[in-house]
Image (spheres, rainbow, N blue to C red):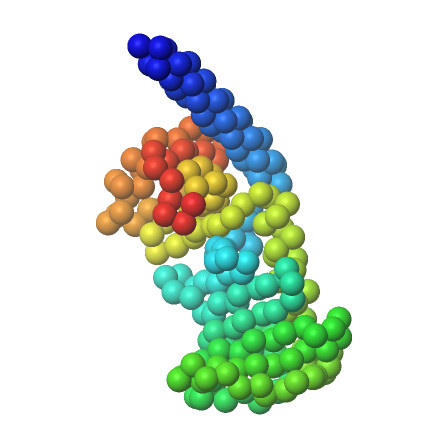
Length: 231
């Protein structure tokens, strides 16, 4: 009996602190959400209509979107070394022209590694997964004469850090709303005045949004019952 009376207070305290932690997180999420609603307007939201953002380990994954598909994706690393790992180079080259020949019929991926502030190493990977160093050292300005992708993706990275988000979702073929992932359970959604949902998925999404609450005009914050798998 003494054993049970010893355990019970521990269970009660554990439950109390777990609830307190959850309430504290929810409060912080609301603060983050309000900051986002104040920071983003109809123009700045266009960044997240153009780019999907996700994380994988230490990599930030930025995917350039078009309607229901992606044009190309960049894995941006800025921890130990600054590196861009690019798939679908044809799309990337339209936005960031580079003065170097990379045969995309042979190489499906190219990595641009900063070995100094002004020098880049180019490594590619062929369709068999073999790594090839195409250039051990090339000037950043010589390689990217008109548009520096490192500068651009740093600005995207700084923006998502300042907003406190770890992922986004935008699929205009499903609906013209934008989701911002704030934790493994909290999702902030921008719902435009002219909300247009694909009829095939409309009921599902309206039920999802109904589980949340309006924290500001056009903005819905909801908490999932269970954390997302990647949370």
